[in-house]
View (tube, rainbow, N blue to C red):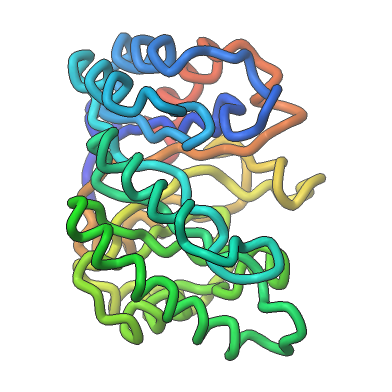
Length: 281
């Protein structure tokens, strides 16, 4: 495993950690201010959300690279299936185009919930695979890889139809696109006792690794993620599995925390991340 105690080059900030994925949350720093603050601390990369990029993707990407940061990815597509999914794929294709303009190599896919009127997940997963198969060639032409992210089972029905790494890999196999892989988020997979087995089958297909922690007494299933070291997830064991699958990319800190970390000064948050990354991850 890589040694992070002195080297921060593998550390990336997902701007959700500062509240930038939710309108009105956080301190409202501009992308440029976030980039400069991360660069000053030695971070290796940054990951943005579409809502903060707008029409300025190229300028923001260029600013990050000029500051010495890699733009590791973009979050996320609209839902592809379920009650809240658009009927067409125009917005999903636009998100691919935004990632390409930003020069982000990876776009995260969060599936959306189960199809209206369906029971279980089989019908929804079949539709999901069909929709990803439609998107994958457009992404390949744009030089963008698609990272399919399974979510914790508590999000079943309204946000996801994929609950485990094995679920996500099965869709990858079904689609068969070379630019389709998975994102592994500690918050969503820490509980899975078959994680090691699943990641052993994911060789070369892990496109992203998301860091946070699971708080033992979480108060909100979406907006109460823990800072690394504050919870009960075995962070080093999970990273060992991810790296064992061949992943040597950036480790992306993504913490949704409406009542705690989003209320703090972003400079404090960025400093704590550095400390926890060195000691806990």
